[in-house]
Image (cartoon, rainbow, N blue to C red; front, side, top):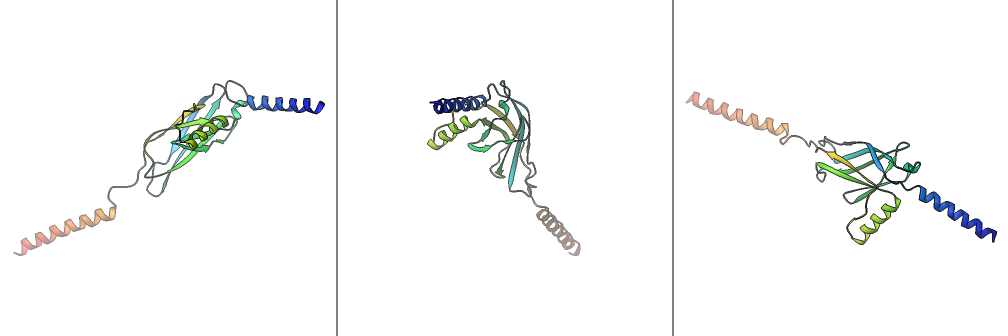
Length: 170
């Protein structure tokens, strides 16, 4: 009898700990981001965003988070007491300029998103918060390589030199 009451008390304690770790009324503060802007020698564009998460219930900021960007889910790294970081890569040709919405989910929301993805349904799960990362585009180099431009310029100068020489000699 005592062991049943003891195990019931442990279960109640565990449930109270789990329920206290959900972040209620989350707010993202101080979001900053970085994206690769020079793609002349890289094959992938890096996207990094850092932000702080504030919850109305104290102590819930240390919740495990997951981020979803364009259908891809990645874990969120904890870099401080209330600071988090999300990073991902995209190929240069697939990376578009503009805004990327980074939707943040707790473990419960992550499970619901994964379930929707597995069943092929649209993601209608409400995120805890959303962070916007702006990518202005990447410089992939000049339209013409300098070697081609120099060769073309040499060909034009040589043509005019030979044409002028022909006129002078005739």
